[in-house]
Image (cartoon, rainbow, N blue to C red; front, side, top):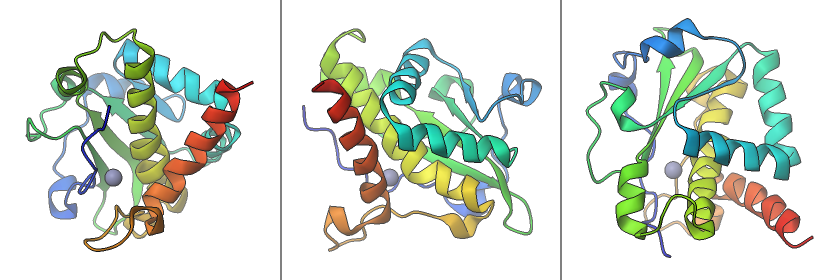
Length: 183
Ligand SMILES: [Zn+2]
């Protein structure tokens, strides 16, 4: 199925500092990824097994003591637009330093759009692609740099998708996952 093109996955900086982290995430800071939902956890597991680049990135984030919190919209108080499939919120301090990035994935909307059960291979592929885009594409560059300057952008208006930072990163993961699937 053709997913809507991601045009604005990054939340606005002025808004970000005010985004409260879920309480459970604050209480469980171990590891570079905190995940709230079993479908998201399964996807992360597939990406971890299938992609060396993904594994290296997570190790690098862990070594820096930074992390991404990956949740469904019901776990945050963020007023997310119901039509938005996914959004990334770097949590920045006054110096634009980023130690945590909140990634919100609207699984309910994805299911509505796809019409597939969560166990369908095509649905899993869609979730994997979204996680690769949001986490590896957007969140990890913020976390590697530790700053809002690490922003890896979506395609600009008029720019070809493959010329954009985030699509290039997403494609690295998709290639590695595809290789694994064809073995
Ligand atoms: Zn994006």
